[in-house]
Amino acid sequence: MRRHHLDPHKGLGQNFLVDHKALRKIVDYAGLTKEDTVLEIGAGLGSLTRMLAKGAGKVVAVEIDHHLVPILEEVMAPFNNVQIIEGDILELNPVNLMGEKPFIVVANIPYFITSAIIRHLLTSAVKPTRIVLTMQKEVAERICAQAGDLSLLALSVQVFGIPKIGVSISASAFFPPPKVDSATLKVEIYEQPLITGKQLDMFFTLAKIGFSQKRKMLRNTISAGLHCSASEAEELLKSAGIDPARRAQTLELVEWKTLVGEYESWLEKKKTTVE
Image (cartoon, rainbow, N blue to C red; front, side, top):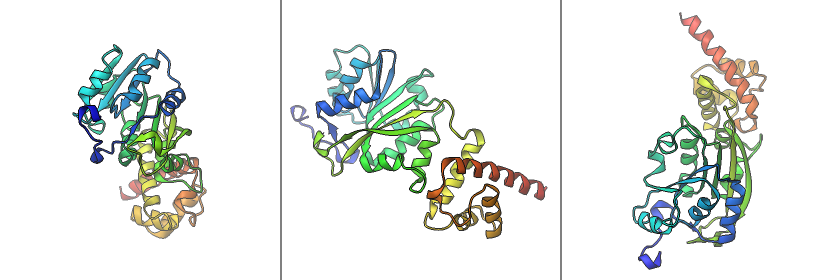
C-alpha cells in the first residue's frame, strides 16, 4: 500500500491479513479443489485471492474500495481464473454474481458487518454450499454456541448449516492489527434449512421476539411480541412442550422448530375464530 501511497480505510474496516502461514491455514481449512468456484468478499490487496486462485477452479473477487481495485487487478494479472468486481457485497445479488452453480465463500471480512454479510448470503435465493469467514473470534464462538448460551445470530446460522471454528489468528497477523483476536469459521450449509417455507419466516419472527428481552421469561416476551394475553402465550409454549418460565437462550433449535409448528396452528385457529 505504501508503494501506492495508500493507507487502510478505517471507515471500511480494513485490516489486511498479511501473515502467509495464517493465509495458508485458511485456504487449507476451506478444503478447495479445482472443481470449486469461490466468492471472495473484500479481496483487498489480493493476498488471499492469490492462494484461492491456485487452489480453486475460479475465483470471483469482490472489492468495494475503488482505490484498491487497480492494485488487485495488477496483482492478479498472472491468473486467468479470477474475475474482479468492484462493488458492495451487501448491494450485490449472489445469484447475479455466481449464477445457479454451487459456490463456496472464503473471505476475511470487515468485522462490523459480519452479521449483515452472513444474513445476506444465507437469505439469498442461491446459497453457498460452504462459508469460510475470518471474523472476530468472540463472534465466531457465539455463532457456535449451544443451548443455554444461544443468541439470535447463532440460531440464524445454525438453522442453515453446521458452524465450526478451525483456525485461530492473532492480531499481529493483520495490517493494521485489530484490537481483537480473530478466528476462521466454517459453515457447511444444508441442502435445505432445518425449517423451511413460510415456517422459516415464522421462526425468525418468534426468535426475534424471544431474544428482544432475553432476560425475561418466554411467557412475557411472547405475550408482548404477539400482542396476546399471558395465558395465551403460556398455552402456546406448553403446547410445544416448553416451560413458559424458560428464557430464549436456553431453547435448542429443535424446540424452536416445534414452537414454530404450534405457532402456525395457533394462527390458523385465531384466523378460523375471526371468520
